[in-house]
Length: 250
Ligand code: NDP
Image 1 (cartoon, helix red, strand yellow):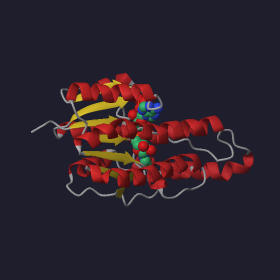
Image 2 (image 1 turned 60 degrees about the vertical axis):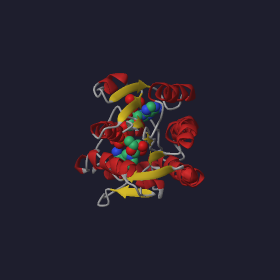
Image 3 (image 1 turned 60 degrees about the horizontal axis):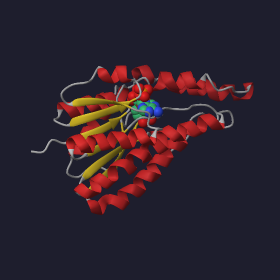
């Protein structure tokens, strides 16, 4: 049987790393992308090939996909996962930081879809898994820019699904609730870079309170398993939100 080829973004930690490893354990050859090459090197194996890139760099993405096609001849799975959370009150996050949030979380996903779709259409097969968030369907104080980016990904995903289904390409949304990874510590670090007037203190305290549940949240394996199910199922879900018992979503 032809070996299945997968691309996973944000594979240097958390959900992306767990997904890359699980797909490799299940017979996929995985191109694992992120910026921190030293972290990717930790998972390099016969089935995992690290690729250093920033998802904001379109040339790097096109270069990666060309490399995949030149060396493997096909691309079966794209897992769009690389993202981060720019927290802070909408009024207080700089427009520069807001643009960067969309550059990575939205345009990063879009660039990868644009790069792989011509190949998937030509193959008449392929599966794209976009990792969003429960905040892809709701929003709450302090999460405005991040939630807006995830809403945008949901809208693009639903459109692309309809556009490519007749070419044999399936597009799935996986929307995690709170998961224990590096994500929340990084969010809190970014929150500290935003200056809020004292009037917003209640909202900032609320954010810290919500995110304090992270140490008790499930690990990334639960999402990696959902991705594996979505890429192997003959009838993949359109949108899978989990874990359902999550006390809170980010
Ligand atoms: P992590 O912070 O552990 O992982 C994020 C990954 O994205 C890292 O590998 C990071 O790699 C990569 N990344 C970030 N920015 C870029 C960039 N510009 N270019 C390339 N890679 C980048 O977080 P999670 O694993 O938790 O997050 C994965 C996904 O899950 C995200 O889409 C997130 O929105 C979503 N999610 C997470 C939740 C949670 O509670 N953890 C809840 C809901 C959704 P590097 O820094 O090396 O580039």
